[in-house]
Length: 261
Image (tube, rainbow, N blue to C red):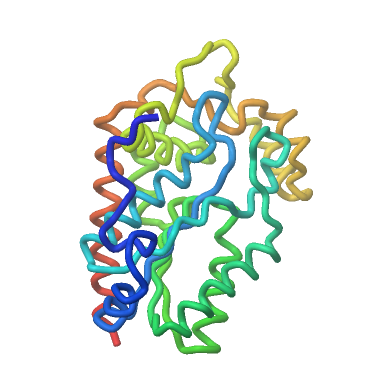
């Protein structure tokens, strides 16, 4: 794949020395953390769609708001998709412990505020729980931009894909952004092999209520919830428009968050 928009940032901790990082923490004791996932977005889309979007957004926010950016966490709570090849699955308890350990380490180094960008729906409950726990225990505040749940982000993305079933709209926005960010994020394939019908709503809701068994999901929707070549979804223009809108919104909210004591 060819990267169109760089995921790197002058503020990424991977590219800085510890002395540079300590200096930046002294100037602005805040850190942005991108959470992605390795899970399916249809039969011809890359498994790293969520990571592409959150990494690029976090880099953009870091640059615009003079924030340190933590390394991408490219795996998460993707058990529902575990029957699809290549899916990387962490149990919620494992993901929680990983997140808490990371936060505690950074807090000990002087970080006092966290900006979190999450691109995987399964991660949300754990991230929400841990940030509340950290605030209560350490008086450390966080702001979370969840690409699946944030109402402002969803309202704009859903408006671009209101012809799709509701569960597909957030995924469509994510893939559109990834197509803008990386050429080849969605590969050409035989359209006859793709899931093109509507999600069986009753069966899908029943599946969610009854444990979200991964084998049942793959049998019910073999394309992994989304047809990555659905009409109107993939164009550089559409993906760029969504990405820039989300980035501007996140930048504004982050700036306000950082100004508060």
